[in-house]
Length: 224
Image (cartoon, rainbow, N blue to C red; front, side, top):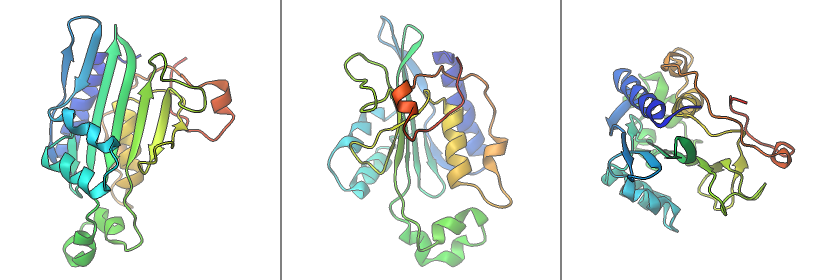
């Protein structure tokens, strides 16, 4: 199972890859901190602003606040924001929050397609039928939070819907998260960025319950 130091290294390696390939336009490198007791957090500068995403505000206002405060690990070249946060308790994963906030201002790309069409990766962004929506992979193993089916330990939330918690079979590593984002949102006929992503084999153990396996869920590579 990945340790805090392994998770930290994965995030650093992924950011360097995104910068080197030109997919990232801005970045904040992660750092590790401890509360002096049992807790170890992997986070980034500006992370204190992420709670705004849970408030009842316009998505554009949430995005603007996060962008203006640089509350992200990476801002992609199309404006999308990536956040990766992990909390460990005595080397055991307790929580993670992995978010993808696409830019709500796609009109900039759609109104001036001639600027972007030369770069194939913008083809989807320029398309008029694209609707930007956020997604978040959460994990929370704290007592009193987990409720079978209602609040799975590991789950996927789509579009800021408060009660959208699609069960996920295990916690998600930084590598798995970025591979998912690149493969599904930055994949073209000639550029398969996910295939070049630095590979990490360490995975978290499965946490999904039997009842959660009996409904539609997301299966991610995991250990025992």
